[in-house]
Amino acid sequence: MRLPTWIRLHLAAVRALLVLTTVLGVAYPLSVFAVAQSPGLRDGAGGSLVRTSGGRVAGSALIGQSFTGKDGEPLRQYFQSRPSAAGEGYDPTSTAASNLGPEDTVDTLPAPGAEDAEGAPDTGRQSLLTQVCSRSEAIGEREGVSGARPFCTPGGVGAVLKVFGPRTAEGTIARITRVVSANQACPATPFVPSYRGVRVECARPGEDLAAGLTVPVRGSAPARPAVPADAVTAGGSGLDPHISPEYARLQAPRVAKARGVSEDRVLEAVRHNQTGRALGFMGQPAVNVLRLNLELDRTHPFHG
Image (cartoon, rainbow, N blue to C red; front, side):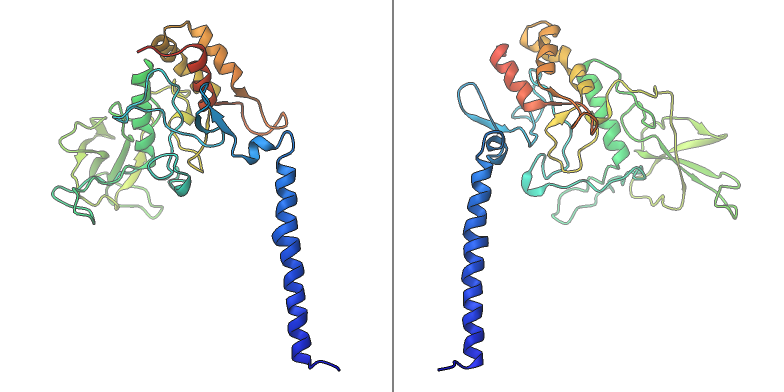
């Protein structure tokens, strides 16, 4: 007996469901799992976990982490990772970039007496430039080098002026009437006393400076700062487990002193954990911070 069309269609759908479930829901996942367990792939498939000498999982070689104490301050015996914009730092559930670009140079200064949406005192917002400047100053102080960089004030904020006055048709200032150091809240002393003959003022918190022409001031910092770029900028994912060899070498004297070993021994560990360019030409050489710190814990334990 010939079945009705609607029944035949439903039976065909059920058969397709069973076949696709078997192939894509069972056979394919099992085959992928089997391939992932083959030599050379098992470690990556398992999360590239890194263990201490005692067998405890210390983290993943693919995800960065902070090496700080209970007070949040960097531990002097460890190499420090680059900054992270993922959540509170290296949060895999909040992986993201800060979405701040090179044009983000002017801070939003906290308004006196203002509160945020949760009722806490208004803290304003730091521009990307000020974040870079403040990080560079802090790292320079920690590592015993100059933290100066172009377009940064000696106080660790972006060296940016807001210039006011009548505009020409091209958008330039025809006659300067006022100049404000946009990122230095009063009563701070501006990083430059004057600009083109006009006295520079400190910024009054809460004042809208959007109408002014933004003028970044390079200053006298060297073109190649002592603190490398990856030390003061966050990676796109916020989970970068590597630092540049330059940043590792900058930290080596501090780590060697804290562990009571020669700098050469520490630099030897840096070389052990340095990788070259992918396929010999893509990317830059990098140092895995977690593996480096664990090697130092094994070979030169900290006794502080």
